Amino acid sequence: MKIFICLKQVPDTETKIKILPDHSAIDPAGIKWVMNPYDEHAVEEAIKFKEKNPTAQVWAITSGPKSRAVDALRTALAMGADEAIVINSPENLDAYSTAKALAQVISTEGPAHLIFSGKLSIDANQSSVPQMVAEFLSIPHTSVVSKFETSPENTTVERDVEGGAKEIVQMINPSLIAANKGLNMPRYASLPGIMKAKKKIIKEFEFSALGITPAEQKVKYSGFTLPPEKPAVKLLTGDASSQVSQLISSLRDEAKVL
Amino acid sequence: MSKVLIFAEFQNDNLKRSSQELLQFAAKTGRPVVALALGTGAGGGVAQLAHHGAAEVLLCKDSAYDAYNPELFASAAAEAIQISGATLVLASASSSGKDLFPRVAAKIGAGVVSDGTEITVSGEDVKVKKPLYSGKCFATASFENSPVKIVLMRANQLPVSAADTAKTASVTEHAFNKPSLKTLIKEIVKGASEKLDLTEANIIVSGGRGLKEAANFKMLNDLAAVLGATVGASRAVVDAGWVGHSMQVGQTGKTVAPTLYIAVGISGAIQHLAGMSGSKVIVAINNDANAPIFQKATYGIVGDAFEIVPKLTEEFKKALAH
Image (cartoon, rainbow over all chains, first blue to last red; front, side, top):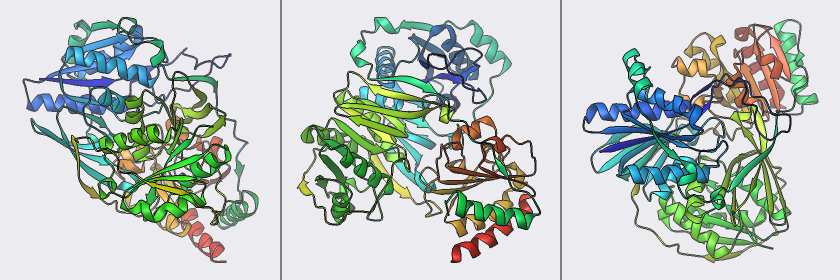
């Protein structure tokens, strides 16, 4: 029984984003790459599943430039994944092509009993790839999952929606689960895990050999800009009462937001 | 000109503000606007759809659509796109919008852009400005090889003017094909609060480590109650277990863009600033004058939150009373 984790390597949340002079993309210089934080929850849940189901094999898969993306796979291996696959693909592949590639390799290497992923990647902020992978594989999905239970036939999850509400969703397996932060506490990789992950052979696919045509690239980004500089803060001085009354009159009369 | 399809969302029989924004925007493009309204509640909303700009309403009052189900809705939305002939689909980047439309896009071979903050439609050409890295930068998304273009807009980004109650729409009731489902919605558990979600809120009061302990969030709840605001939090206090993850603002929480964001005891880690710097007016209350939050703030109070916030609650109460 194979369990897949779709994950992505992204700039660390502490990264200050810079833009290339021609505005065509972000400046990759000096970026510290990490596993997308939501994907850590996907890895954790897959490993927890394997701990209860020792016959399960956990496969981590990513699409991205091989030279760096394999590091995120090694993190997953160090946490406890059994195998890893990199689809060597160009930077800035859109969600549609990425999902197509992932779905294609998962069906070749599968079949998958369960697929885990993060609910979104913190770079493109699209929340698209997991749902698209599920659609391409004709399996059900639930995104923004904060609780997971499964039997051989069904998976029951809690999905977080607006206002703190939750939907309890049951899916027939195979199914895809896109993790929210509340799902679990991702473990740290153990030292033996890290040593083992270093030696592991990562299976490689070339995106260009998957037969996905340029027509399957649907969205292109250009004109990268930084957010406009904010004018300097107006510091309100005086004692607390005076600060409070200045704030209220500023919000009402100057900013006109009350 | 080809049609624009709007995925309409209702809350307690009222058309959500985010859907009003999309309808009014679509009507201004000059292209015919079709609204897709699903579920038993949608029947009562037809007039509202027309008032905000829908010329046609594609309606299905089947109770099967009362709860959001990805497979069922994806099938209906794909069919609605096909029968309406729409080449542009607009929906809100809500929980259901963001879950649904990538699946629809994969089904029909379309591109989807989520979390748009600005949209330009000229003829068939559609460009969407959206934040990347939770707002650390912006880029313009354009479509290629995508006969149908799907755009999910963030709430509170487009203007809404008063509804024109004289407008009417033609209504087509349609029974969409139902695929055999592998997904069952067993239960919907309501949230503790009926407040607007952070992503839709017009005013947010957010707390961080400066509040010292979980119980002190009561102070923010009191302030929020006076302002009709939703309460948010920094990652530090969510990780400390003071409040739930659904309240987290930032790159690994929610990206928000309210009119007014009041940050109390939040120093302003880069990943928090990324998630809230799209707010129109930012107020920072912090006892550390060097806290990075002041670089993003419109108004800053260097002071003791425990002294300032209760006073602010009292004064807002008075100010808003008249």
